[in-house]
Image 1 (cartoon, helix red, strand yellow):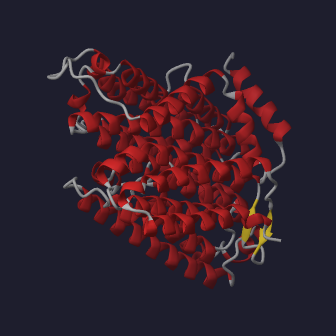
Image 2: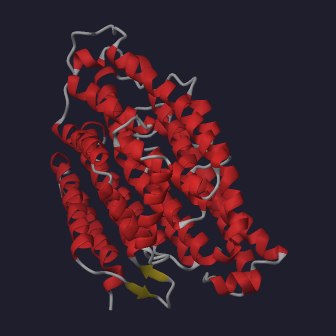
Image 3: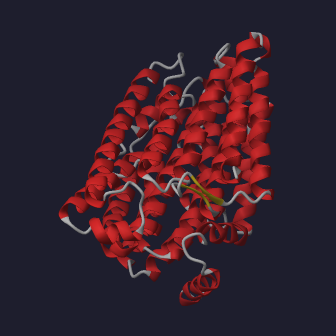
Length: 490
């Protein structure tokens, strides 16, 4: 009976355990809460892979299908990497607050899991708030960073505007359709009139804030700069994937009859987001701000898959999620280690990193090349497949723009690599001490970026399984992908 909410139930029990551990453990032993959190997440990943938890609950407003299960596995993996990367940071800078940090991460994770399983707008709103409020708090968790409060205020203000838009959109949606449940029937009967169109515009604007697409991205660089870096690794990936997850479900389950309308919206949003993200990354001197604008640009690439309006586009978007997760989180964790050594997030702090830590310099180079789409790392296949999906739908101008912006991105990624391998620093002989937890998390990300670059078929199968919830056409997709590759002589 409770099979569809098994993961959420176990996670809530784990949250209670972490809460009592934080309450009763002495300060010197609170590192145990981080280790317990990590094992809890690994247990949930194992359960999600080995047990069938599919089903519907709460009058069909909550669905656990292959799409939501796949995204939950991605969230769990991202949270596990962030937790592992945070253990040494929390022990060093969050003395006495470690339990609160992990509790907030887990509560945000619960919200993400509710969001991607929602088929009802009020439940979706509750999930979004449960996901977002802990993120506001964690963004201001770094007391030693003077930019922390400013970044936290910005994400809070933009988040509240997003929530207000979602509530307004839900109200207008109800007025137009008479229900907060979405289905093609409700679209055909209510959303084709002007009131319904207004509801869609407001709802999609609210979703735009959640994924940090243009023009709703202004909070991103300041928040990233001020927040704890291991948390930024999580913030840069998991909440955005959750936003895309519900956007995919809403558009392909509720708005499928209005296909032409919303794909045109996604077309322009993808183009503007890629342009703004890449161009604003060029002049940045702070690595966290550079990666923030880079992340905005990657949102534009994922929107290419959405603009294609096809199953191939959705599947390649899920592929992009996985590639972006390991590449971007790994890069931010390297930034955390460099900051521990130099006390700075400026690009110049990476000068002669190769002489101080060959492991870190090689890992960072792998992450940067993957984000830039260089063969044959996993990021290369992510961009290639997303461009193929857009080309198959006839958006050749958008593919050309994406390819041009990829060249622009390579300039600022290789600018960081130049500092790592060519420029000379002021403390060239000072080796960088690497905590075990950070070394393991960075090593896992780098290894997977390389291995999945040589074996992308594994993620393709993973992505197909996710999107099979929308249409059971795996054979059709294989033919479509094969046709797209053949048309390019590959």
